[in-house]
Image 1 (cartoon, rainbow, N blue to C red):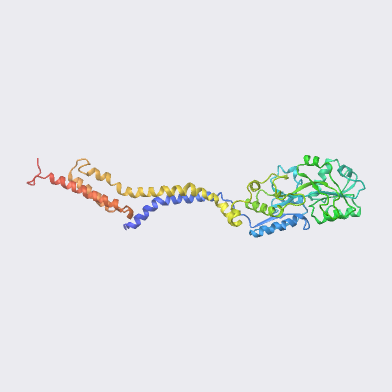
Image 2 (image 1 turned 180 degrees about the horizontal axis):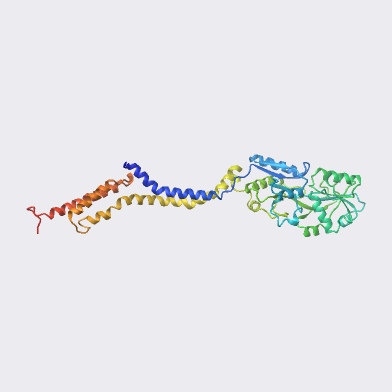
Length: 444
């Protein structure tokens, strides 16, 4: 059998100490990796509304922000908020985020698996009519022909809720499923007496209707009561002259009710995508508008659905720290792998302090273990025995020690052991010499 070389024996000893530590460390990193979040998806789908609506326009601006971070935001057109919620609730539709008008999902929001990412801006409810009398109360519209919004739209959901609160329904009033351009055309043609719209003040349709002298805009006299009863509604005021100062449009302050546009997401949406979405929302909506203050939106207020935990952290702390200084992909990678610091702190650092002393102890043990046997045959320390037996035992020890191999840093201790073996031999030799008489005979 081939005898191992000294270098091989040293390597074997080194591995015997450090290999178990390395295996333990690798196991710790493997276990920690099981808790690493998956990477954010490269494509996200958002449901908006029609291509002429504000939701679609804002989604296009969001897509520009996403594209700068290497993520594609796919925009899917729908009939409106009600359809958006239905798509989010049905698995397999591929919708991750959706614009939803406040109040649309209010009845079932608490029990829904969906989460709000925040509100974006106020979407006032405009009630245009051509009645002779001044309308300040929805009850004045009972028995009239009302354009309440098409099926699947958020406008229809909110309007029907308000009308029902005032005991107005299809049994006593004609509820026509039109809104938007079709509703405005019906109002101008006299097919409806009033039309309900939910849109921003800068909407071209709203601007046109406000500038048409024949149209009259309802001011809600009981706006505060609606705000208290229906929390998703906010009371906002359109100041006199805000639309056209030269023509003084509107001619007086108008009190409106405004649900807020909100972002709703599925539970499975990646936390990094939530952060990126809210960053895009901050860039697009943060400047405020006719009804919003600078920096008021996006906001955790004015929402029907439970706020996402990740969104709450965003509103509390702002943009994640790493994303302020690093590209999105790099920041998310570091954030995902932060859990890998646990085995590093719990295993690697302690082992770095413990293993060198353990290694030193094992190397020294190769030398020190022989001193117990050496002391047993030392004529000064050990037990008395026949000199021949002790000399034979010393020869055995010396032979075994000659096979011991240690790294160069421990060679001095090995040579000290060999020197001590020689010292014991000299003592045994002296004992033998003293035990022999001058005449060469052993005394009686």
